[in-house]
Image (tube, rainbow, N blue to C red; front, side):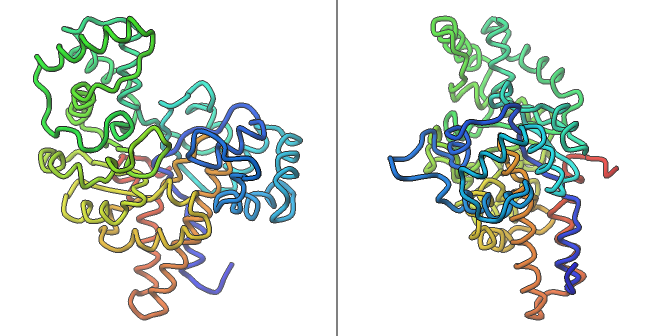
Length: 381
């Protein structure tokens, strides 16, 4: 324990990770591990390594000692120790060490490779709730078979069934089109025409990947009708997206249309547009945001990103997330680096006489857990 009450309070927080994915079921190979240290879909040129990055250094600094290795050990020694311990032991060690008390899990991407709700609950020993990805649900419906004329009704029926115990929804429209989508809900005729074109493409190609902008809008508005919090990927991600079209300011007209419906709009990750997200959270009552994905990948510089997230956004509308997928190292580091960044920011505000220690502790609890519990209606038990 430190002698600083703010640092002690942040260290003791039982966090709610409001947007996260499962840990890998199997042990990754060296190349698979290296790819999970980057948002790229391929490794770099010869004589370069993804370990030589902020997140790679963070793994060697903070995760290695938890696996019984010296800090900054060589990558090959880290991977050898990981293989020696086995996937389940590594996952369990890092998930428990994270101090995350509640995972809000989204399983819509490569679900076969990662642990789902039950697996994450068993590994971590804490509560896990589910978020349903809208596009994955529509793609399952297409594979099962549906007429274009029935798509609107059948999708809503599937959505109702899939979310009986879910606490939220997720859209990856940023990946499939961009955040500069037309804001208005499509008409029934538009949906039938678009569904006909898409389903014909699925039948001919055998691939059910939804990119039709009209249907993407239809899913979003169906989600609005469901009245659960809707998460949107925003900003930084893999090369499947066009970052130029992932600035949340593109959503302004949409946010104006949904204003007053009291459906929480959750802007995920937001880096490098986190200041824009803070502005939207300030001016729209139902907009919330985090800097999740940016924390791990900025590593030793993540404290600056976290501090910037404390500028415009109201403190009751900023949340913690790791957006970890696959490597339990990312679950652990998301929490570790967030605590470090929050502690640095809050203690500096208190030391400068700008904040009281009481307020700093209260804000840390809000962002680390209380905001997520309120927005998603989560139990604190």
